[in-house]
Length: 165
Image (tube, rainbow, N blue to C red; front, side, top):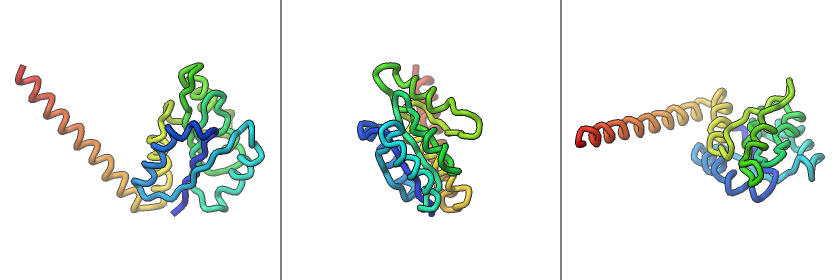
């Protein structure tokens, strides 16, 4: 199975990024977690991305706040899919990171989840890997069935509460 690279721009992003790691663990997807900066270690980020496919990665998740150029730098140097997680910051409540992550030039896409959406980034990575892995696909089907069961239970509970009014 291909690995998922989980790259964050700063160790302070880990409190958000750990939700992606936990979701990857839930699906038994191998991963590596690293800190690299688009601005402070751009050569290292570019080199990692250039070699990611040869090093067994299938997807790269990039988490960054503020200017949030990490996803774009990584995407510029690979043909692997890159998923960006915009990290909320104090200054603009994550809107700066969201716009920097999602607004990429033609030919350098970064799939972008919501601000602090680490769990969804991991699920999207699993969906990408599941295109060629039936066991992952089956796990995703089971997850969606579990979510639907939860909604059905809530629906029945709310109907009961409403009838009791």
